[in-house]
Image 1: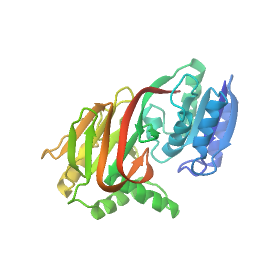
Image 2: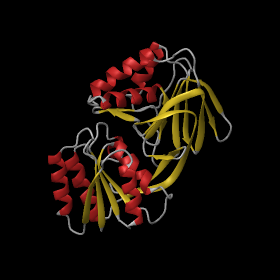
Image 3: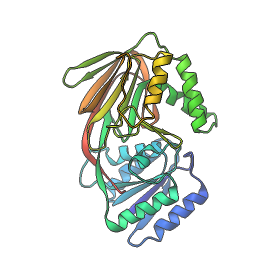
Image 4: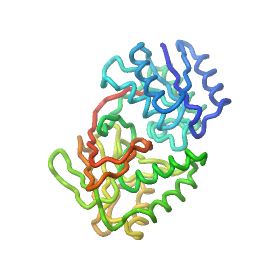
Length: 309
């Protein structure tokens, strides 16, 4: 089997030593003809995904974070799902590694590589559903409002050389919460059936559970979200300090979110919806910041990608 390994040297927890160990293990595996390519900047991983499909690779492995996976998937599916799309085998190398952990892989890159090699040797895989946001595919999550503001702030800090540690996420979240507009909700969610949820400050969209990880802790607004179902959207209509603390505590529990004052709503297993804003707002997709938009359309695509797990 021809396999392409896409590595991102800028990912949070990757190292040259870890890279060499993983490459050695893959090259020593029976039946794998491996090519290794290192990304050179934004967009490079997407181009490699496109190339892998065009050249008929059987599997594309990634060693990086959720951003690397996001780009590769958008390259693999640039022409849409199909039988000629290589399978994806992600190995964790970022800070959260939401996709790999949601798929049941270990968060240690060496252990995860062993799991991938075992799956390849036994022919084990699964086909998962993905989300679409405007013209982009996403594997795990997206969001508008405070969620996206935090991601944008974290990317600014990383551009200045700061690490994406759990503590920095916590302090950045607190800082953005205090700065955010909690008096004038700008978002409206409208389902394909015509149902509208108005007066929203924050929307968390999940294609699986959890939404993210804070170190070892799984954080989720909708524990029922699944790769095998449609999209879930948590809409917060109240960001008072008390309501936000309640919401944060609920996200650490393995039960669906509730609201004590009825100021939040959950859309579960949806085929699609559109989020509009009264003025452009920033948004994020798979933990990657995106420029402000006035409208983002989300849709669910069942059985879009085969993954090696």
